Figure 1 (spheres, rainbow, N blue to C red):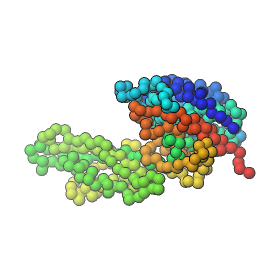
Figure 2 (cartoon, rainbow, N blue to C red):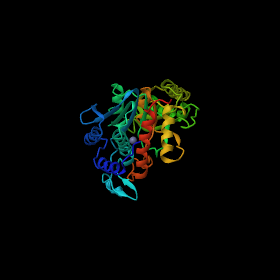
Figure 3 (cartoon, rainbow, N blue to C red):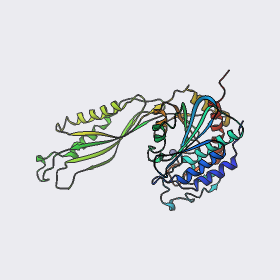
Length: 386
Ligand SMILES: [Zn+2]
C-alpha cells in the first residue's frame, strides 16, 4: 500500500504553479523540466517529445510484467492569468489560505498533474510494479486544442493506451461520456451591386441571416442520459464591404456540439438541411460548409473496467459513492478515445474556478485525489483476479 506524502505534494504543486506556462503563447519548457525531474527521481523511464521546440510533452513509464497499458494524461499549460488586478492573490504566487491554494493552474490542471506524479512516486517508492505499464503523459498545448500535445503523441503512436484517465478538475467525479465539438465556417456568396439598386445584386448577408434562422433544424432531436442533447450556436459573423454596396460575401462561424450516435456526415447533412430550407425563401442561395475543427464525442459503458476500478478506488478513499457524470465541454480525452482506449476524465479541482481570477484547489481534495489515483493505478494494473 502506498501513502501519498501530502507535504511533498503541496510543496511541489506550489513550485509548479509558480513556474508559469501560459498558453498562448505556450512556454511549457520550464514546467516540463520540473515534472520530468520528479518522474526521473521516482525511477520512471522519462522521454520528452516536442512537436515544436520549447513545447515539451513528458512521457514517463513504469513497466512491470507483460500486461495492458494504462495512460494517465494531463496538461502542464495553463490559460493566461489575464489582468493581475482582478486576482485577490498573486496569479503565480501559489498562496495557501484556509486549506486552499490559489493561483493559475492550481485546478486546471497542475493540481491533477501533481496528484498523479505523487501517486506514481509513492507507488514506485513502495516497491510496487504494475502488471503492464503505467504511462504518464504530461503534455503541452491542451488549452489551444492539443494538436501539439496529446494529439501529437497519439498521431506518432507514442501513446498506445488500452485504458486511459485524463486528469482534469472534475471535483473527483468520474466523467465517462463527453460531447464532441465541431467548428464550422458557413460561407454565403452573393453578387455586389450599388447600394441604391439592391435588386441588381444578391445580398450574401440576407442569405446568411435566412440560413441562421433555420439552424435549430440542423440539430437532431436526440438526448443522452448523461450529456443531454446536442446544441448549435453562432460564434461570429462577418459580411459586406461597405454600407452602400450589396454584400458579396458573408462568413459565420458555427459551434456545433454533438453526442454519441452523431457522425461527421450527419452533422454536415443537418447543416445542408438548414441551407435547403433557407432556399425556400431565397432560391439563389450559394452557400458552402467548411469544417474547421472536428472533435468526436465518446462514451464508456457504466460497467467498463476503467469506470468500475476508478469508482472503487474513489469510494475506498473517500468512503462515499462516486458520482459518474457526462462532460458537455471538450478535452484531450477525445484523442485517446479516438486511439481506441476506454477513457474517463477524472481529477481533483473545481472546473467552475478554472480559467477565472479565483482559481484555487482544496488541498484535502488534492490529497484525496493523489490517494485515489494511486489506488486506481493499482487496481487497473494489479494481479488478475483469481
Ligand atoms: Zn484543463
